[in-house]
Length: 209
Ligand code: URA
Image (tube, rainbow, N blue to C red; front, side):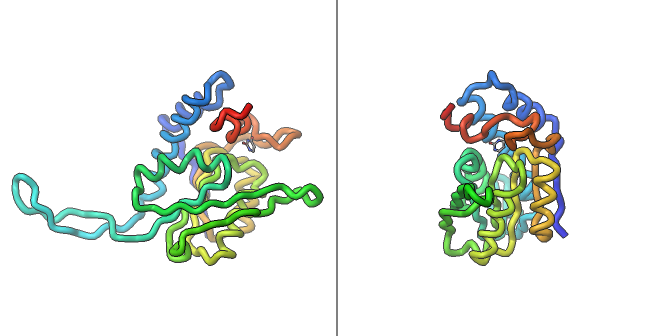
């Protein structure tokens, strides 16, 4: 059964609080998102396997742990997920990157994937789906559904902020998937924005408002 992990580390919380401030500009917002993404990935990858290898230090031979070769795939949900990619790649330089784009159907109000391009080995990879804002859970759950449709089996969801209802929907639809978040916020307002949230993450990352 998948779990929801909330990272209450003071560094993450401090940086997130600055992001929430409406006076924080695009440059600082992006930098903070990257820093938090790195801190989160550090924990999310805690169970990656290592194997002993021989190296020669300046002092002498040593048997030391190195990561076992294992395919890792990052899948940002367009467009806010892009704001986490560079930071994660710095820690996981061999990771490949897929993309999922989604639009909201006018009639059903449901998210519909319009674009999905994954690396060839995504089905054998640990897939980290990057979606900063999990508001209703609809697009996060639809993203996971799309990944499963493409054959991915080992999926972890990385949200910056989720709501209880968003996390619950993802958990109900995908009980096998772990969800990692920096904050579980109160809920949604009448426009489906997260409260207190940080506004529109995409607009704040890309300066489009
Ligand atoms: N998407 C955002 O970027 N912000 C919200 O508050 C909800 C969805």
